[in-house]
Image (cartoon, rainbow, N blue to C red):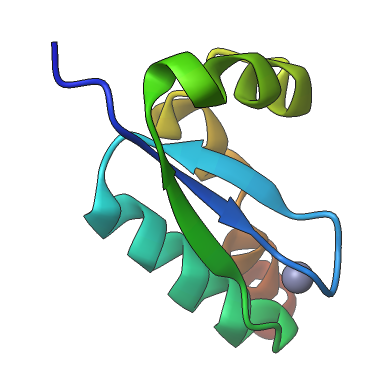
Length: 82
Ligand SMILES: [Zn+2]
């Protein structure tokens, strides 16, 4: 089992999200910087160490597919379209 997880944390706000791939975490960090101007940070956790906290923080399934529609970028785009 390849169970490493990447947790993205922002010190400037309450943004916290856990990813199963570095690429997705990186995309989230770039999106967050573009949207909020914050520099989020990431840390790589093993499942055994991170699962308890990740579950408490997220309280959801944690799949990226579930959060896509919640992206602030979508709302920005709607605002721009007026
Ligand atoms: Zn932030």
